[in-house]
Amino acid sequence: MKKILYIDMDGVLVDFTSSFDKVDKEILEEYEGRIDEIPGIFSLMSPMKGAIEAFNKLSIIYDVYILSTAPWENVSAWSDKLEWTKKYLGKNAYKRLILTHNKNLNRGDYLIDDRTKNGADKFQGEHIHFGTKKFFTWNNIVDHLLKQV
Image (cartoon, rainbow, N blue to C red; front, side, top):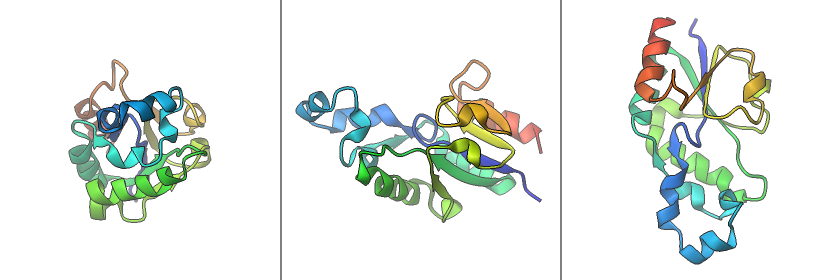
């Protein structure tokens, strides 16, 4: 039986800041402090370096799900995240997107997340804290997870 691996989207699979140069400056100013509420912003984001290759590689070995939070005040975020998943992750992510504000409610072996919010700090498996010294790149994470199999 494959171990269960959850991967966060924003800041892990998706480069959130990559959308900023694709949005009018006036809109960015209007939504200052709540950029994630800009309609359509999640559809403009690019993948993090190495994320797609890592996802596809790990999908062979692990039972992988995308576990993400979507802003409550941005209804397009929900559909944008689904479309992004289809576009960049394709068949390996088919029906594997979970949108929640309580990541700790999901049971699994590993959670890759760049933050400890929204229940990541209470996840009962191993929290692989993306962007930290030990897990700074996707290569670090893949190496770590390949050793766990």
